[in-house]
Image (cartoon, rainbow, N blue to C red; front, top):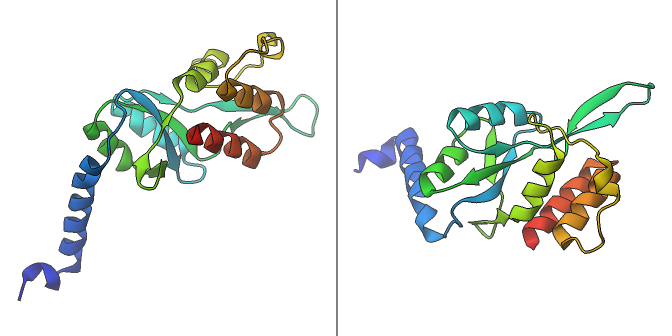
Length: 175
């Protein structure tokens, strides 16, 4: 009898290794930003581990006013989601196996890159710590912005519901 069938832990490790090798079944658009879905409330931990792996990470956050006057709370722009620039399959696997990461967002098993202009727009609005600052230039942007930017501008100007913000993110991924 085959020893791998007797040892469930070993079978699991073999399946995991095969899954890692399956990254050749799809093509990554190298050097693009991808969306990483993390465990709830673990975004900063994921950011820490990814940065320790020398990956470009962007975790946008918003300052929201609370019911009490003058009380600000910093919340994720897209709860449980971060952006990571992935340059090769080794980095892709490093992201997938980072503590706190549930998956790289994909459609039908294919990771989908996020539009570069969308990420750059958010980064231009953010501090080095990733906190989006509402500059007056957002409110007075010209009307000829891309569809990606228009959706992001809407959620920055009306950041009420995190589900709506995530819906915009998924629309960005669907192109």
